[in-house]
Image (cartoon, rainbow, N blue to C red; front, side):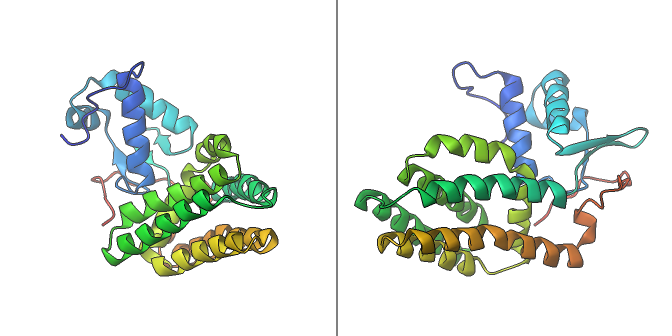
Length: 242
């Protein structure tokens, strides 16, 4: 299988790789909110024993990405707007503070950001949502790198699993990708002009746009979101978003 956890990195365990794979599939919406999960089926698909699958599901439960309902089974959690808001708070605080400290950004970093935006345009024209999402992640990491705070990306990344699912949903069902690319371009243009204040405000507006996206998607597809009251799913075959 394409997802089979082979060729482990030095020091990486089967459990670590399985956790990474399942987490990525949840965040990418390959495993959609509300989808049912089976230890046996996942172990068979990945070509491994049930133990690393079980251990990974326990960790994903602690992260709030899956829920276990007695006598019903294990399910991918619906997107929790509260967790989205918490992750957004962390992300905005770190990324905006980092940018605010930057009086100037070196030409090499600006060129790398501009090249990234060109690649975003290419991914959008090709209809490559996965490619665009990866480039979006790289763009924000490069912003931190350009201001000398790339190590803070690990903190941002660890906090934003629910936020990332909301962002993926927004790429499918909320706003044109081109509008996000335009927002990225405004941030880089402001940095090129050494206008840090405008760059920070543009970044803050860009990051907060996810709240409007979540509300629009929630109105159309409420079944994808948690209502905060422990919504109980119905056992059914695994669903995958297109």
